[in-house]
Length: 428
Image (cartoon, rainbow, N blue to C red; front, side, top):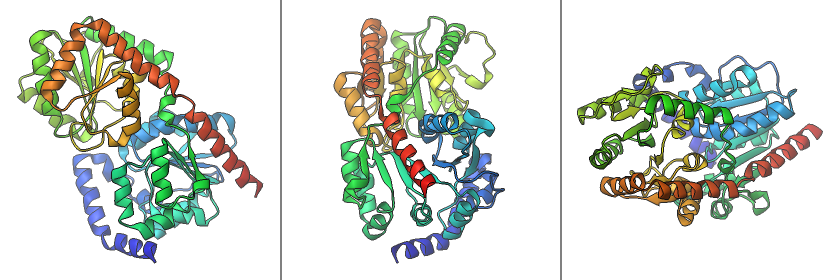
């Protein structure tokens, strides 16, 4: 009954969902394309009975990449289907894998849309990344005898309270997972409290610690840094949200008083904000250049801010910086992945809101690799201090990288669980 009421409510608000899709399409035209896929209408893949990986957007797609690469290499006879919810996630999947995987948008969580999707794809095992828990998606998949694994799962205290308000629905859904592979003991305890059977829970750590930066990417970053920035001090503000850019620009203005040659690489989280952020930078009197306009020449001396307005290049741009600030943390968004700059060996700064990555942030902060700052003044002081003392900045970055290196291994533990589910499914 709870899921029936949920589904009925979803059908009732479907006009609002479509209006929101149109509004997003007005801001980011890619949302206007392939709408039928969101209702389960698409040409079915030629192969069935493979691995289905659902990754909502860019971050989850990147996290899922090693899983997908493993199965492409170890099970070349099995198809891999990858679903996302956002155009940016779709672009990232296509850039990483091309036609090696079958990519389609995930269906809206309507019973008929989910049923059409499952009928077309017919996976053997479903892997859902992190926190993308949709009742009909989970329950209908499990009802077909398909193991559903929640991978690299995280559940903040805040999100757990939200799920707790719909206890009957939540418990009926969480009980259907064949395995929940949680990032931390705290995450795992919250899942069990909300209905995941204890025997179906594994705490593996975060697979994001297993991030490997290819030698080719390191070489590309080194070349770009030398050609574009030279010896100028560079800090990057990665994955910023509305409400943060003004704070970051104010901090950069203060940095320029002591480091007149400093550069800020400002990388908004969402592409629909690129134009607005460019206008904001110019309106604040900064010399600005877009990454998309880069033509292999050094940035002009008058350029003080470079707008990262390309997709799929954040890891590359991090490799061009001396210091990293991770966005989504100066507003109540919960932060973004601090392990990417840490893997580069950069000193990491963030705002106080980090509930999406609480355990990772705590590890980095306890080791001294991450510093949290509340406002532009504190951020400016931290940046000025690190730029003035390169040895200290290098030490902080080395500590951050050591945290990443010492916590690797979660990916292998997760792959063992997925492989076992696949073997058991094939044996049926």
